Image (cartoon, rainbow, N blue to C red):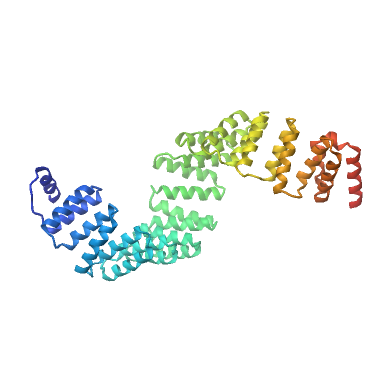
Length: 456
């Protein structure tokens, strides 16, 4: 009634009288519904009709804070504090301003003063918990949120925050004790059972986790989070059929998600039903074309089927989304080599090096591929570059030996061969595998024979 009367007044430019409670209800309604311009008008008119109202003055400050006019809000708060030094809302608003300015320690001091003046302390404890979180003081944050739960067992926001604090401290065992105590008082809380299951899951106590998720979905048969976690747990236990069933339930309960399709696909792949897995991977990327994991799983599936052309198509899709992923570039190179597209294979390995994937495998694979296409000079340069990172490495020494001998640099070739033999004699087969013409060189054979004899 008051609201319609107020809006009618605005339309007709008339002036109606509202008592203080009516103004407060109107302003709070507009703030809650995001209609701040109307809230401002209501505050202005309210203060004209009730100029001494502390509550209206505080609502005025709240709007100023929302508009980020913090200095003006602070000035008004100082005046209000002189008039009402025991009003908890004064200190709450001061804390809000301090928090926005990054002064979380002083914000907490003001919230403690607010608590001392308040009858209903829950919201203030919650605010205090958030300030401690800003300071990464998880212990004090947890204790603040726990106070909220003591007053209201259905304050699930605070429950989540308590568990978050335990998670950040990696105190999973203590989280389990806390949640079990909570469930002794509220045994039908699906949220608490879900959170307890998550703690057991992190600790790899999968059977206990599964029991918790069973309770969660038994209490609330539409609890999607419970079914998801149950499915993930069944996967860990190797029960892929059961996992699929639970993932499919989430798809029935809510709009389909790429994640669920992806997990179903992976379960089918583990059951060696690769074609069915591919169907679900395709559903996943249809649901979310920017989910690169879906594209890479399709790549792996077709690679496994030796359908390298399709594998190349899908790895290219993944690279369009994330072309900084060295694993994708390695796969791209591998697939192109399978298709005899050596130029693209070289490109993939060079991209890995550009992205600082400087593993010995990348260097040697690139060098071997360059040798295969006949670019011995580039292969040599890659190995010299690899030596900056991998000194005294047999894989590099044997390759440098072979290439030096190919370039008719016998002295250097034999020196690298000797270096390789000293590091790892058994790897000398690299020379035979990659440089069969070199391995029959009489001086190479003599050095190998003499070194082997000396080892006996």
